[in-house]
Image (cartoon, rainbow, N blue to C red):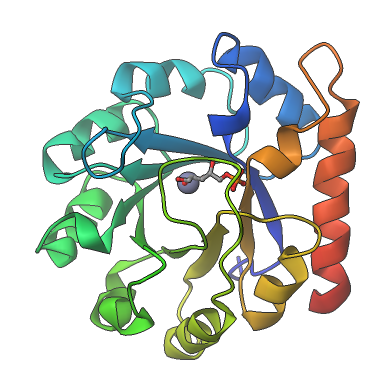
Amino acid sequence: MPFDRTVKIAPSILSADFADFGREIQAVEAQGADWIHVDVMDGHFVPNLTFGPPAVKAFRKHVKTVMDVHLMIAPVDPYIYAYAEAGTDILTAHVEAGPHTHRTLQAIRAAGMKAGVALNPGTPAQAVEHLLDLADLVCVMTVNPGFGGQKFINLTDKIRTLRAMIGDRPVHIEIDGGVTPDTAPLVVNAGADVLVAGSAVFKGGSVDNPTPYGDNIRAIRMAATAVAA
Ligand code: DX5
Ligand code: ZN
């Protein structure tokens, strides 16, 4: 199957109701989500704390699409097996999380998952240049990781550099932070294909009133695909 570079919307459940993750996942998938983005934070690598492997394993029971797990933790390596066991499809680690990202990406693939590498806003594209053959996804953070609902940092130059570096490799470019119908066209135009969106997807809706989720997903997709076409 050819590599899928069409625009995919990945709602971040960081903006969901934390008391109702199962139904929130079902609701956004029914409303058109392509992937489910799961933000794991350790209160150390980032100044916020979310959930760990047992919770992620429980989410898996509800995810019918792709479970995209974004680790904002350090260290990463001791937890790789637990996230594989939890049913993760794509496991992303930060290049800033330790000195041996090369080994981490190898270990993620060896555990049977697709491997992603994430860059903080201040980290240059070149930090992943020699990792691209070991990666299935590069996540460009367009906010400083830790919280949903922050203002988009325009890093289109970095995205363009990465897109050129990736060339024909089957590697997704994912954008995480501040994605809205206004910012989505900028990043897709620069070469991104996976758009994470938390607040812009969940705003105005709930599990009992999920149609705004669908409206929000369609608005982002339409704005993004207008430039992709
Ligand atoms: C930030 C997380 C993001 C976050 C995005 O640390 O990695 O996935 O949920 O939230 P929004 O879309 O609200 O910026
Ligand atoms: Zn994320």
